[in-house]
Length: 179
Image 1 (cartoon, rainbow, N blue to C red):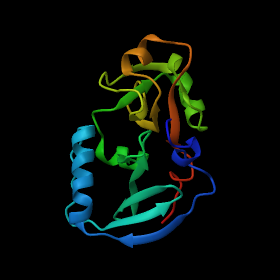
Image 2: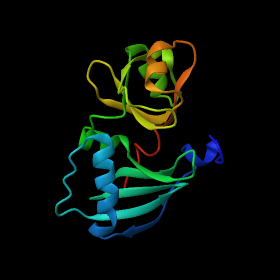
Image 3: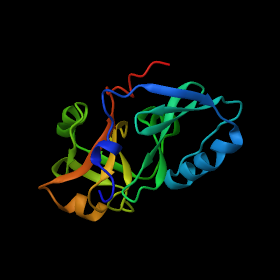
Image 4: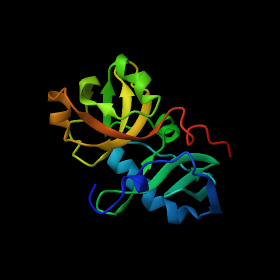
């Protein structure tokens, strides 16, 4: 990643929730509308409580006390928003997905990067350096989130290197976060 250290975008076990603060709906609405458009999801936020919290180098977006999305810097140091795994389970997005075979799942659940050999299908609009969500090929349940290291076409065709750098997965500290 250009201009940004990998340690700035990948989660650390040392991160803790800090500076938790309520925010108004009008502040979070543009961010959620952008998420909705980019991921093809319906986001219902009526009568919800919105909060921001610092979580290491990330900004967590809490909806009704659930860490539902993160704001994170991309390779161009632009801040973008993406759902956490709990957000993916809530919103069920239709875009930016990568499906992996059963053999890749145990590695992903231990925080490993996703190898292209395990990738069985994906949203063909994925570009290199996009944030993507990884799911199992049979049930389409989210397993992890990471940075695409190649375009979709190459991820499907290649078998020999990393396809996604994992930053959040089921079982990590963010997944287990109790608020």
